Length: 444
Image (cartoon, rainbow, N blue to C red; front, side):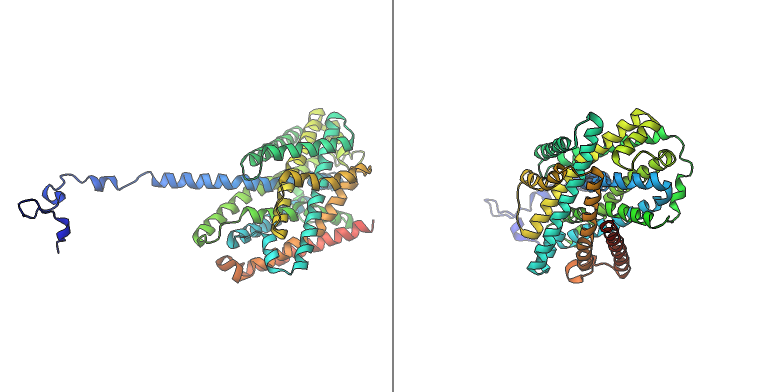
């Protein structure tokens, strides 16, 4: 039926058809303009850009897995037992990927990070207790970063430990001022420091030359209870609680986001985490194998950061010692900034309080600096930091496992039975090993 409104009435009263019917088009221009051959390319470009945008935060998380605590445990394991415990590093890295994936999934699915979920679903007293232990974990992380950075400055310039720690504290504070929260500059600076670390160990690998027998450590095995202590320390230095809180915040999406978008986002974050943590795992494995190849037979004077520096310098030359010190300094600076951002997530989530990053940096670095001012041995300080980190792991893993298994919270992203079973085994193994480590260290 014709629509009379489509016609107009001229002065003589005769109805005329619309202009497009009076003068029909002679070409099919609209049909030619419809196809968009560049659409697949544009879609691919957008996916690549999204993946790169997610890789930045993943690298920030990955830096925390190559902090000075990892230097101490990995180099000690390699120099004392050769490549025997290489399989522990690989296993710990797989565990870290799995745990970080769960932390990302809980943020994507619920729109809340792990501290916020604890505040919403736990009693107030439990929430305050979780917040307190999380703050202690953050301070222990700062202690490890300050010790590592201070030792690196001592090795490079001969500075005493406490002044060197103050320089590291000021440098990390300057890094936060130059790269405030919500900007890419912090991610870029962190990625640059990670590159320095990778290049430093890459140079040492080239200088080491032959790697004969290094892969023999992929066969699971131990050499007594002392090697079990080191294995627990490696896992404790790899799966760190403050990074679990941080990753759950990175994965957050706004409320009301469709499940299709959430699934795509989770896949992107999963890929980025595998790349970033895979790189961190290669660096950790390289630390152990480097010590196994160069220091296992020569046995440096002491199993400390100073001893490893001296041993590498004597075996591979001064350039290798310099590369080790630079990599240690880069790890300390980068990890210190990551710890500060994790602390911000912890306070905001558990207490609904937010303080400027610079103010938080000043508050959290005071206790570690006070400990170092007492003249504590750097190696003992690193051990103390790892004990506190080990103590905090179950308090982050247990809520994470509980929330990701609740369908009312997670919806279609609820853990499957197999995923829950693997998570229970991993959480139980990590908690048991770290409790064993804490007990062994407390008993001397």
